[in-house]
Length: 162
Picture (tube, rainbow, N blue to C red):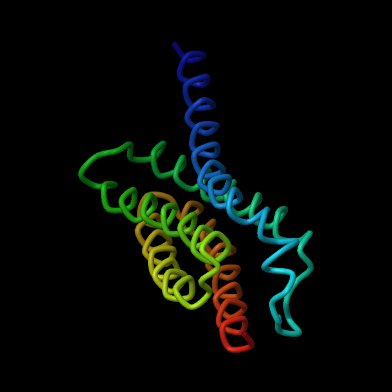
C-alpha cells in the first residue's frame, strides 16, 4: 500500500506539472510563429531580454506552478478548504495562455496589457491562498509574480513604443 501511495504521489506531481506546461504549450502555439515576423518588427525597450531566454524561464515557472498545485493537493486535497486556491490557479493558467494568444496571436498588445494586469492579480491570489496549506507552495509563486511583473512593464513599453 505504501508503494502504491508513493507511485500515486509521483503521478499527481507529474500530472500537475504537465497540466501547467500544457497551458504554456497552448500559448506557445501563437507565440512561436509571431516571433520572427510580427514581434521582430516591433520597437522594443532597451530592457527587452533576448528571445532565447523566454523558453527556459517559462519552463521553470510552469514547473514551479505545477509543483505548487501538487503541494496544495497533497497537503489538503481538493475540497471546501482548497477550492478557492484551485479556482485562482486554473484562472491564472487560462489568463496566462490567453495573454499569449492575444499578444502574439491577435497582435493586440494593448488588450494583452489589460489581461496581464488581471493575470498579476490572480498570481498574487494564488500565492496568498496557497500559503495556508504549504508555505513552499506559496513561495513558488514569487518568481512567477516577479517575471510577470517584468513582462507587464515590457508589454506596456511595447504599447507605448508602437
